[in-house]
Image 1 (spheres, one colour):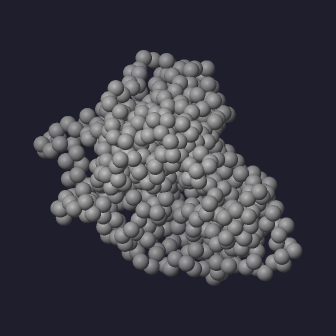
Image 2: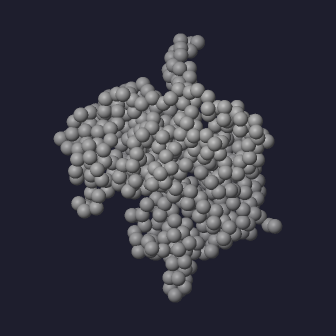
Image 3: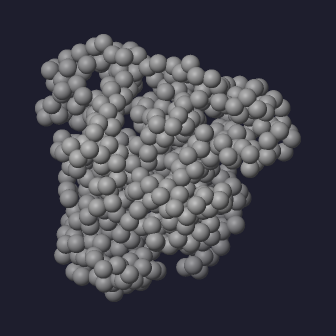
Length: 593
């Protein structure tokens, strides 16, 4: 069988960069294969796919070495239009892909470009909308849809030319957990029904492996690090070495001292066949004594007192919300898209005010406070970074809020450098904001709010679009703010890994109602809450069920073990070094070098 995509000694260097982004790529992908292209930010995975769809070299100029053929066409001798007949791409940022004023217009756009008769176009638009479950939304405005709905429209839009290759660029970034599972299932169905060759660009390995993939191409520093099966990759050390998060159940097996060899179907927890030795080790680990998670007894810093809110004075977006958040807590605010999470955050920040009830901030009713007064206490990082960015240069954006508050030039420089390093942005400090990726823009907005060191920091989907290395850098800095300065942290998130590893409690919304406010291990073990909030059971829960153990105890034991590791690491960092500097000072000095 001839490959549908074939790289031969391929390399690429952007015109504006001194060094190549891709080196010595030799890769054949065959018709009907489903391939995950995995890698950290900057690994070259997106550049690789942009070479396939023709954005390189026809939109992004640079030097190509070697050859790349797609569906028998050498790309550098082709055009974007010609390649679009064979390759369809669903971008990470769906908003950047929309051109129509309605869902139907957007799906029809590619058909109009090839002058398809209207009599053929209308039935095909309806057919493609039906395939992705959006037939009832054909007259809707794309920008008013949820993240998951936007992605479905983008997928339908690339079907017009009956393409052979489908590329999905970080398809899970903006989706709630259940919608992410549906997206993975939809991609899997598409790969089977029409025998599309499917390329998925992601760093969320566990979520993609919800459905099987044929191969994983691991990218690192512009090269192919591995071209292998999921099982073989999980058994290796390549994930850790290349900044990719392994599935939680694999981490749990390592904590329990299990060998990854000898287990069948390692990449699928449902099909995993554990050796008897590993099963015994896991049961011993999860049933051993551990330090239970403690609940905070500090005074409340935020109180929602029977709060309701409506944008149009008719339909309630939030109904009778009542909870307290104590000073210094780390809280996960979770629920499906449209559940009311972001509305609750806007209420807290004073951007909108309650229709009924009251919100207390450090004992004061926020209705008596201006947005500026609230902003001195609460910082809010929005989900869409494009709605926050103002300045042209990254370091200027991060220092803007400090400048507005009249801080000295020395303070601004010191804090800006500190947060840029923590968010892995320091090397890009002088770059134009428009020149960086969506995920990097997200980091810039997080850094700009971190620089203020607020009393309460609200982060709306802080890890969306972030690879594990960048995610870890951001979380380490946020947790240090919480640990060292007592800053209360609220994470509005779909990321159950984040909730497990970085919060004590979870507040859960569903259809504008508060359905749970409890310890995170209790929430994630509550099947009714998980289902109602459109979450998904974590692999720790499913591992507990597989072992015949109480899932809540399994999750709490895992969290307790990880917190113990984190405390040991923090203590090591805080210990005086041989040179007499503190751990944090030593780390800063090393970063400066």
